[in-house]
Amino acid sequence: MLDKILLFPYIAVLKIRHLMYDKGFILKSVTPEVPTICLGNVTAGGTGKTPHTELLLDLLQKSDEWAYRNVAVLSRGYKRKSKKFQQVSMDGSANFYGDEPLQIKKKFPAVTVAVDKDRVEGCHFLAHPDDLDRAKGGRKCLNRDFPTADVIVLDDAFQYRKLKATYNIILVDYNRPVTKDRMLPFGRLRDLPSRMRAADSIFITKCPQYMEDEEKAAFLTLLGYKDFDSETCTAVNSKGGVQKVFFTCINYQPMKPVYNEGNPRYIYSKKLVLFTGIAKDLPLRQYLSGSYKIVKRFTFGDHHKYTRSDIRSIMAASTANPTAAIATTEKDAQRLLDCPDVPARIRERIFEVPISVKFLTEHEELVFTSTLLGELRSEATMNK
Image 1 (cartoon, helix red, strand yellow):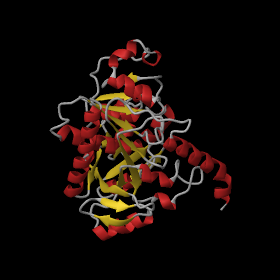
Image 2: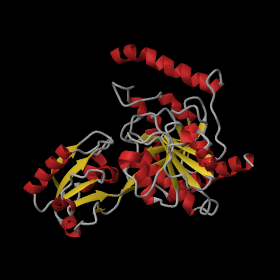
Image 3: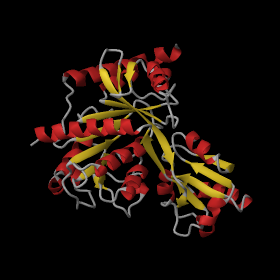
Image 4: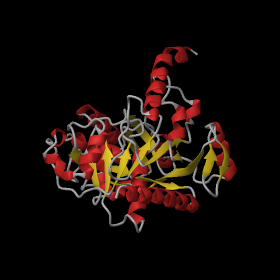
């Protein structure tokens, strides 16, 4: 009750802001010149935006319509040192671009990945690369050689109301229903749960590998949705609107070395030293615990920049467990590579755990892909 009283002014401002954008009164949204797909959430981290961005890129590259088109990703580049618009380079650093954009670029080298706090400006530059030389916001861009984007995937831009995307996707963690959560700082919500109704599709993420339709319907009931139809992948929200709903799960892949010196023999150890700097590491721990005994665990804040002191602590744990492998996440690996204090004697033992996401059923993937491509096709036709 106390949190509702204290947060009343903040919630009121949020509601007024959204209403003004919805009505176009004083606050107005800009529609980019090329089709855009927005991925976002109403919580502060932990829903899996980066692997779902990678899922979208994979689906686009596999489609006949977009396989040979110019696909781009635009991210804010959280905690990066660079300013304004930058195109991410394969040989760049997480410190300069941000860990998530760099990870995406390394996985999808053919995709243009850019960072810009101003998403409207960023979309304009991706659609008009030649304007980088003329506009103030493009003068600091170090790498200006990229093709004109045909479609842009917006990573974490749902709260950026200045921009109106072609297709909006909201991610909801299966393990933390937003209707059971509270606003920051008392909970993890950074936006109103009712904003889910503004999405074209809702992705329920981090689900169990297998779910019956009854289980899916029961979870959606917690979110205020009813009449789930597994054939059309739709459900009815509290205002009577019909929305697409899809369920995804994490797909962990075999560990791989972070450094060139990596020695695969440590993968077969039964012991593990684990360090993570992400919002939630529980799913990763549960996965690794199936094959390893985690003898020491270090947890840091999301997007944590590793220091000499951190490396010393990890080294001490590895010395105490000389046969143990040292594991971390893909995101952490990007930041670790920026740290010059990792000694050669433990580099051979450090591995990252690649992650991807997948739909629970092939039918869901087919329905989503068909829906998304249809929206992009329609938008591209209108922009001609």
